[in-house]
Length: 141
Image (cartoon, rainbow, N blue to C red; front, side, top):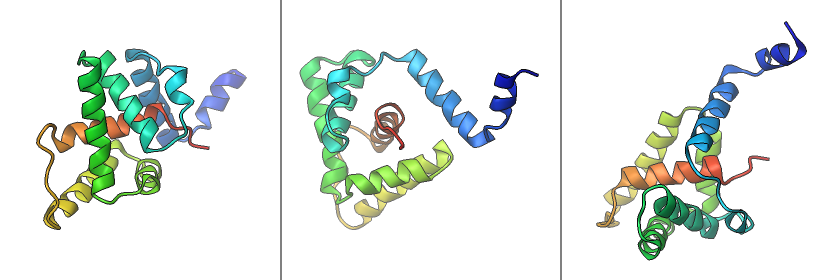
């Protein structure tokens, strides 16, 4: 067994799974432009990444993509979640299903407090794009 194989055996299975999943997603989708990645990490970058995805991967018109992304990020903000809270949920939990479940619970908790559910998109799409953002556009250092 060569050095490279030995080194790869040392990576724990969780990290290996995460890296494989991220690599698969990156190979399927276009790279996020450097102009977007240069924006400071936070909700503004999240909206840009979501708009980019909706326009390039889902084929929505540019303005529609921007408006939808702004509305999606607006839900997190309006519901009172800080960017740091979002980052912690998406970074601390191991499994994709756990992250999705936690984000869904956070959203549903706000509905039970009287917040309105968005009409132009569902929570599933919001969760998917939020996780897409944290996988593709955040450096975990």
